[in-house]
Length: 74
Image (cartoon, rainbow, N blue to C red; front, side, top):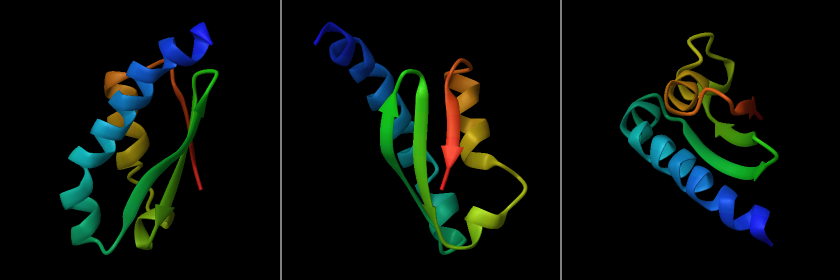
């Protein structure tokens, strides 16, 4: 159970980062949501045209704050 508690702040930070991108994603008719965070791996659901974009805004924003996190976009 200790591991889950230590992951909570990171998971919350990822959610905050995704919320900060909401206006950009909404402008592109897209959305992003954290599906799972475990063992320094964040699985992000991305819906809409942003899933195919090469800019990697979502991954970049997360890595700017949390460089050790592996980001998987689905």
